[in-house]
Amino acid sequence: QVRLVESGGGLVQAGDSLRLSCEASGLTFSRCVMAWFRQVPGKEREFVSGIRPSDGSIRFADSVKGRFTISRDSAKNTMSLQINSLKPEDTAVYYCAADTLPISISNLAYRYDYWGQGIQVTVSS
Image (cartoon, rainbow, N blue to C red; front, side, top):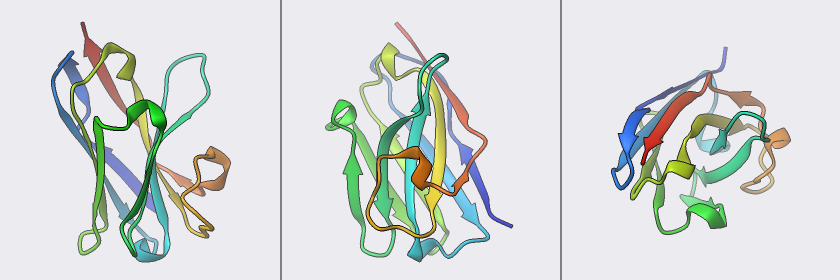
């Protein structure tokens, strides 16, 4: 059974930093593409960043380049998202996702087979 469990969210102030983690189980981590999406009420789920654990290749949405860093620990089957200089517009539910048959690091939600339950990040101004 595949499980993706996010942790590290919460309420922070603008300008703060936050680190989200996703622990994966039940899948072959090295063969997947792992990604972070975020969603606010009334809007579609938005790609934030993705990583291919096998070679460390990464991709970011243009809107977060320079402030977000993605990494993985293949020994622990975990992926992390470091968010610096948080802005109120970063407020969202953040989801961890896994594409178990990746062609590339896709920014399309439908490409991802498995999802975590989501974790709230709220940035106050």
